[in-house]
Length: 333
Image 1 (cartoon, rainbow, N blue to C red):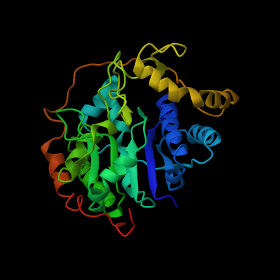
Image 2: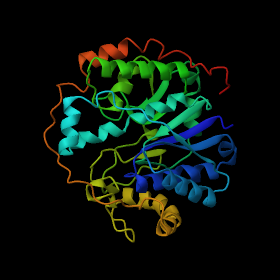
Image 3: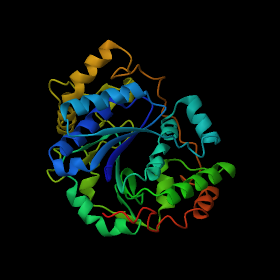
Image 4: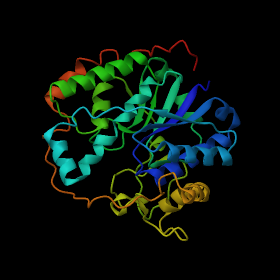
């Protein structure tokens, strides 16, 4: 069994185009490093997603890069505040905050105890360089159960778009307890990142910003030292895919007009023909799904903070062991 996993979480089929580029970027790096590839799986954790679609992407990857192994794992974690008035309103009016309802299955990664470590990456990232240096840098912190991430915005302790973690049954169960308690007391937490930062508040270890580089500007070249590029922001104009238009690309594929789009296209193109041919035969989701209901930006109608007192209390009553060594510590890093 592989010791290491590089994973993304897929909820629904809206992110298929992004997933195609992300998966290729990781697979190519693994293929170019056979020693790493031999002990690593590329993992799709899916929740309410079309499995034949994901299997098609996996087949396209393994057909192009035979040394790479792709694994599909089902697992859903629900938003603990999904019944809160704020989210009921967000779903009713289809505002931007409705997207936070579908991002919580990231916490299922802590249950993957087959692996010693997991590097989680949002589907709107691409890997540009090997991550060997990151593993070496985080070797000692990861022995004691710490969680690696990057501070992207000044207002946040950590960005959960790229996370290095050690799976642990005890930590996963503690998370489940905290999430259940938040629901029970009708606590409010906006996003998975808010819960993540609170739950692991005492053991977040900062990784080098090149492993979650989100300072992408439309006309600015991507710095050569970047390992993982993050197209952060749900509707940001620097995202290569526009979900307001049903997941269509924001650029002309024959001539991407910004450097960041050229980077994305270099990873999108290699699997495009394989996936498109499979989609033409039927049975899987189209690469660009139909446009969703009209997006309404609206006003943000949630409490003054992204996490209220009831939710914080629920987390602090359950996370006592969050920073202890994982229960698979006997495995050697």
